[in-house]
Amino acid sequence: MQNNFDFNALVSALPIRKKLKKVEPIDHVVVKIDMMPWHDGTVTELASLRNKIILDIASGQNHCVLLTNENGGTVYTCGFGFNGRLGQQTEHDVPIANPQPISNLHNIIAICAGSDFTLLLQHDEKNRVIVFGSNTKDQLLLKTQKANVLLPTIVEWLLTVPANPIMIAAGYAHSIVVVSTDSHDEILSFGWNEAGQLGRESGDGVSDTVVPFFSHLKQRIQQIVCGDHHTIVHTKTGGLYAMGRCQYGQLGISKSYCLVVQEPTKITFNKPVSSISAGFAHSLFLSHGELYATGQSSFGQLGLVSTKTVTYPVRVPCLKKEKSWKKEYNGIKQVAAGDRFSVLLTNDGRLIRLEEQDNSVQHVIRVPSLSLLIQRISVYGTHLYVYATSYAVTRFHSFVYTRDFCDLIIK
Image 1 (cartoon, rainbow, N blue to C red):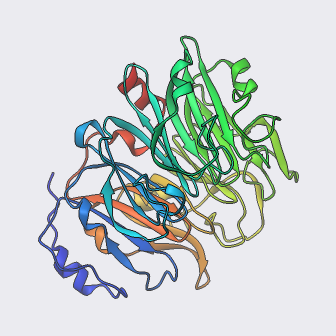
Image 2 (cartoon, rainbow, N blue to C red; image 1 turned 90 degrees about the horizontal axis):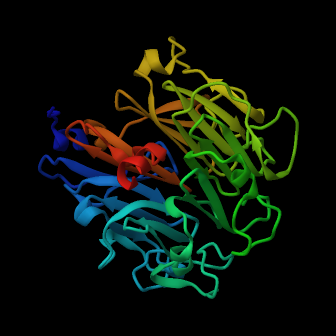
């Protein structure tokens, strides 16, 4: 169904520091919002993506990766190119403001971004993991190369593994690949392991990459996410497991204090989870359109009035009179955990930021793209990326890249 809106009038009425140029009504738009300061943050349209269908967005520390539906899945990158994180054959820190496509790279079905590196998953008879960017902690899975990788490079040794790669995830300097066997899924972990985020006791690097716990568990993986220094795994049967830094309770595994967790540990949470997001020191869980959170709350990033650290998932009530996200906003559609803030996308198209400001921790974000139907958000550092369309998307496959999407595309 078409959504009638006056894009130009809305832009003109908004008190933002840098307004978007007046344009004709459009069907697809991607904007970047500078979240610091919030009250007058800069809003910039990524003009090269206008009217392109976006399947997914992944943001790193100073770069963004976007997946369009062109040629079975085409990747665009923008931001700072230092360490080769853009895959555009440059490592100079000269920003690319408008996303540029990576040449001769098609059929991409998943993307993820670490601090200064990027992972892609390419669909084929045998799926390929493609990497570029910084490799200082062996996070690029390359067994013979330590230097920065400036161009997209296939991880050749994974092609010899009998299991098929089906999911990827990335943290600050660690990477996760989920591979599927006939009976169950295995998890391979790479890179920095200073807090146990790889889920195994062995050190950094690409040796002994299999996480033994999930080999013994023998289950299918529904979703896997990485915070800066922690990892959360959601199994098809509903189990939640976490490993890595737990200094602020971001793993959600206990009411008691612990610093690091090297062995995947079960999160006691009896609600069905539809989506997870992990930030620097907190984690968010979505269940039946309601929000649950654990971890650091000092900056209001959990959406709670209290600033005390939370060490297990607790329900975050909507602070409006209904006290329920479902009653107030028809529920939450997507959660995105950043550094010291979080952003929620509600089912009625609102963006809610969770951060302490002006004696409140829940704020509606008002930007031009709210005249459209928002489909996808991504956050990292102080930037929020928003993809919106002028009509409803009936099946947005990559909204949450889960086992259901893998079954649809790969099986």
